[in-house]
Image 1 (cartoon, rainbow, N blue to C red):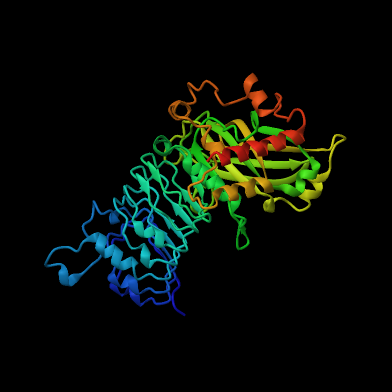
Image 2 (tube, one colour; image 1 turned 45 degrees about the vertical axis):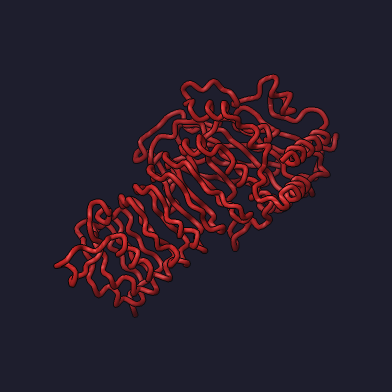
Length: 465
């Protein structure tokens, strides 16, 4: 029986591997994380069945601290081979590789070899020092998860494959440009905590693009798994497009019970902030493999007191303090709702209305929700959006974008929670009238008319573009 898994993790004195490593033809997993490895044998490219390779924390591979990664005895009397070229040569042979972990290696460049790694599903590059990513990443046709947390020198993200499901760029504090992609099936969840320069440079246009893609794409499952539709981004103001808003961690509204068959999903927006900060290694955490979450935000939806759906997302301050206000935007299609949700929502009170309550909870010290908002998405909204987008790939959800002018953006981004004056944290008298809500966030007047008005406003703004 051939060896399938070789684990050398934590071998802090291991600097080299034997050249005959390539003879392990059946090897599927190689874990060298935390070792002192400085060079890899050229025969590694012969491991045609290798699916998982971890070099996490192998700082000896840093191009700055080492001038070679591989041993070539016949060249040792001459000059050392170019380390980037050697790494590219090695990786290019790993055609079955599905998971590659190069995190925390102090890499100042990433090999341009991804056109040869079409099987790759998970790529972890977090904690490195590179400035750019190679354009060949667009050819990672099966890539699902991309981890870039703590890559503080990264300035731009290239175009990525449309099937990618998740991008974590938390604490990429130099990031200025993100290519959102024009294809409608490009709709990854985005973790952009503390990516302030991105907002200053690009604004919230990509947020509109992602929301649009979430709404119009009716494929919300990948196999048996639900696709997550959420974005974390710096910001302290909920756009007016989220018509039902309230101070605090819950919002309630009413909907005509006969609208339930037209409901396609619920879009939510939450303002949250860290009121205190603790050292990462002193906190309890939930280990999800790629990330260790010390804080979580959760959401529960009830239709007439029937628990319809719940969702939770996590993050941490592992790579630095999250001091500014942030937004959590989430879209939940009705396909995710629990069984019998239509039956529960169709029940009405004496006036023919159904009650909807959305509540948010936090886990982890210092995390607080200051305001929340929601928008009910109906069939007509999606049809109107699709019609407006016919022949135009650049159309965006303008009701979101219009809420962020230059001055508001400066206020949101530059202000910390210490001097935050509460703008956008709750409806003033004027806001209440605009949102159609009383102090508890409950819809006032004719719910039917207000839902129709909401549709008119959405269509009007879309048509204007």
